[in-house]
Image (cartoon, rainbow, N blue to C red; front, side, top):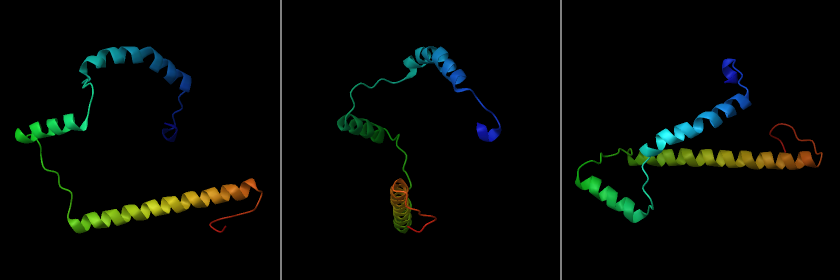
Length: 106
């Protein structure tokens, strides 16, 4: 909200939550489906029933080449995140030992 120029006191929001949460819970509880114990067997049975009834719609996962490309991009992003995390940890270690390190150089 601060990016829109608004500031909200957190205690005001907390008071609102404390005041209205029980009422929201009371009104929503009957609409929430309580399924009890769930297992893969229950899920498989439900999916089989939906499939027999023709209520499942197909999902497009893309072509094989597209999936491979997406997997490569995702792997690259994970590598970048991991290397950034390691660099930040090393820099934090240097700073804790009062060793100067600036920029991307360690």
